[in-house]
Image (cartoon, rainbow, N blue to C red):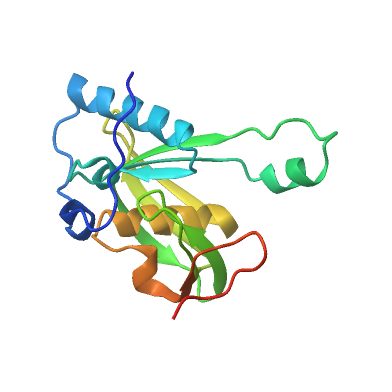
Length: 176
């Protein structure tokens, strides 16, 4: 495994629709392993192939639903993270309810924004071996999935944000 270079705006690959994955070969498996290592090292909770300059419909996501509890309670056992490899993903159902939340992006360092997303979604995708799977996610995990799938369509959180700002230690004032 090797770390991949994360690309930043205005890199053109971040604004293009990624191509579907058609070959599940050794090269793809190496890319997946490299992306997982790169995401963890960054550190991040998700990484899409275009963010490492590969225009393929592939993203890796790793998050623990109990992570907030672990941060609030030092005595809590370590949160168990769930790793998803999503290839050629498609959002098949969305909740009517939408929620606002703060997002950042490894390809847009130094900025965060307030983005409205569906509270819950259902996704169908292929796993790293080309097998179809479906997953229902809600809350923060649904936000991560939507953010990463947007990357595969050339969309960034800043495109959907109602406000964007550079966070400081003192306050988080939106930029003009």
